[in-house]
Image 1 (cartoon, rainbow, N blue to C red):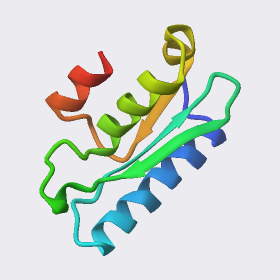
Image 2: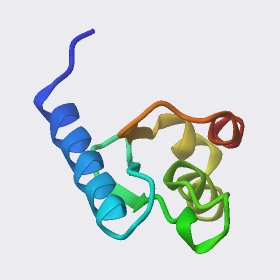
Image 3: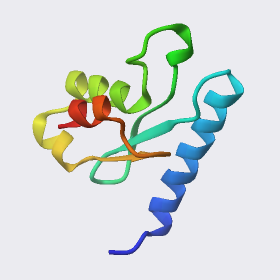
Image 4: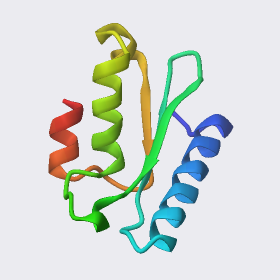
Length: 94
């Protein structure tokens, strides 16, 4: 399975969000949640510099998805991120 131009577009957005985080004095991570049909549903960047160590973008995506999507929609969605999930975020997505 190759990487499509759509995948590249979403990954580039993750890198842009990571740059925003870095420019704001935070760790450089960004993530995007995309529905099965390809709609960007939610995106965020790292926000741990404020003191809350759970403010990783992947964790925020998990919180948002749990509140706004059905289990079926969550299972069909794709998370793009600028780096590998940490253990906390991996557990949240599981």
